Image 1 (tube, rainbow, N blue to C red):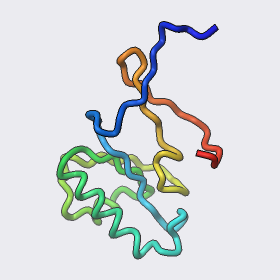
Image 2: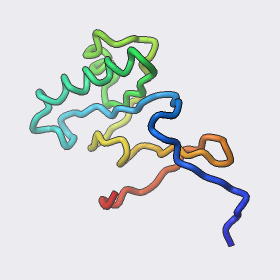
Image 3: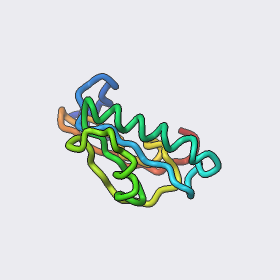
Image 4: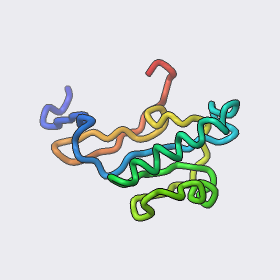
Length: 114
């Protein structure tokens, strides 16, 4: 029998958030064939978000990615070094829900059926 006292909800996109996660592409991701084209796009996205709020940047090489972000607001950049083979954060990042009004990060196994 489920515990009916536990109430979970997925926050809406427009609700306040602590940061936006971006996982940067590299030569071993799904962007390998067009890396030179897509990397400037990721840089622009990160720099633009940093003007308004914090950005969690997941990447394989923090110094290399930091050097690309010349126009970012430095105080709004948070880096996490982690290898990856995908850049779609919804496929590998945590999913935040609120459980009884407290944030809870859920992990799941991606099965390709999203």
